[in-house]
Length: 314
Image (cartoon, rainbow, N blue to C red):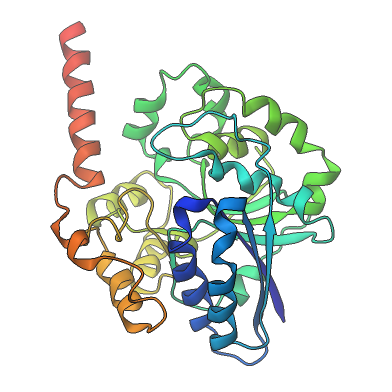
């Protein structure tokens, strides 16, 4: 079995993509599973191809690497939250891989912990994609976003809004429905969650929802899981499975290579330090020095300020 998987990145993430690809291959446990890894990158990022080929060859001689250097059609799209337009490259996969009808996509800031055969076999039928619901669905976060000019267009997605960090994409359906046209229009708007908002706006009713373990957000803790269960976004079993047996850990928000004390960051560092071809890519000392409020703490502070302002206005 060959599983097609794509990573999209620019020059800012050439070290991190090596960790993602290496951990993917190190999770192979059966002889019949291999990967065709597509790396979609900008010209400046293509320098990493040699290193990636070595990583693949050392771990699984049956897996295949294809590097595609592309011009980003979305290079003038809206940038926010420190996320570059490289994030929009995933919206080009149907065009860049014309002979591929189905593909897994994963962000670079992930750590694979298990083989992906079961994820690959998820039945998409005529759906456009499969993905995991995001934390944006939680009532407090939804309310926080509600004053955005375009958010009313997402009102019917409350409770079903997906995170775009891990996607199983039906490229054939994307081509058939000519979604690129709508994606191009929305890319000109100032969308806070960028390509993620675009997918949620244009794929309503065409999404298969995956268990949390396939996109386990590193930054969420016990209280967050309790909220997800209480609000009916995930079941208690799904949350427990994600904590005990995550398939893909997604370091959305704070990055372990920037600050060592990121939640579950030690797992990322333990893996990197255990690999001779990865351990010298990152400065652990600098990461350990980088302290301050975590993503969760900053979010709580922001919500408290909003509540205070709202109370004052009333």
